[in-house]
Length: 250
Ligand SMILES: C[S@@+](CC[C@H](N)C(=O)[O-])C[C@H]1O[C@@H](n2cnc3c(N)ncnc32)[C@H](O)[C@@H]1O
Figure 1 (cartoon, rainbow, N blue to C red):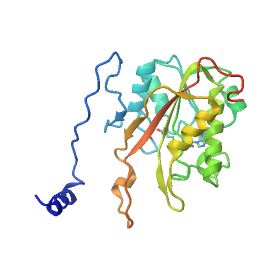
Figure 2 (figure 1 turned 120 degrees about the vertical axis):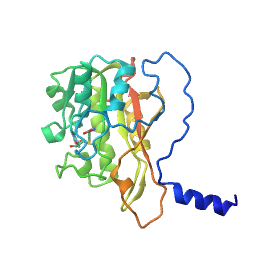
Figure 3 (figure 1 turned 45 degrees about the horizontal axis):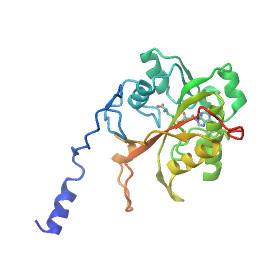
Figure 4 (figure 1 turned 30 degrees about the vertical axis):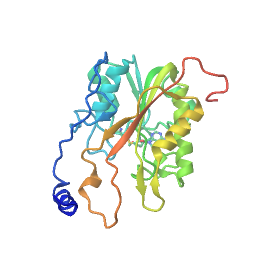
């Protein structure tokens, strides 16, 4: 086949469901051996409300909980309550809060009061991807921040507030995605999230988890510009180190 014929064949077929061969994961002692750096579960699961904008599948949260086996879970940007539903199904206590239910995740004192000073060994956050979806006009809302710098600062405040609610060795899993902003172009939110987390003293000890974005609204749209579509979010699991230096996250 010539190169042109080859390209034409691709052009005709690229929107058809595609079955790709994933690399074989090494056998190991993980209780969830299907949880790898490529998370490709097209089934959204039975958790949360799929009609809530920005709702994420609970299956990844479930698999992370099965892997890390926390005793309690904190979700301070709960949206439709996906993480809470997962925890209920697994019989694990979970504190869920969201700005829409009155909790400002960026306010450490408020979070301490709301959780009655409890500490958790696993926190999950799925923040707004800045202004991709506007959740409210509330100036405390991450999606209402006027600039990218303000958004990153707010996200950092939330990760710092969570730090104080995590036990040493506790995990913070953040689901975040890069995207093309209508005015600013490509926004590397995953990189900026990591930069903010590391500056607070969090460490990363496990691989990034690339979550295939099945069923996103953009996949049903047609755009009049050329770009390389991003078909994934990234879940980064940070750890609050066991031994914390005095200067960290003050
Ligand atoms: C991407 S959605 C989370 C969706 C959720 N994972 C689900 O499956 O339904 C982000 C959430 O962050 C919340 N949010 C934005 N700023 C916040 C803040 N300062 N404190 C707490 N929640 C905030 C929004 O109200 C929104 O519900």
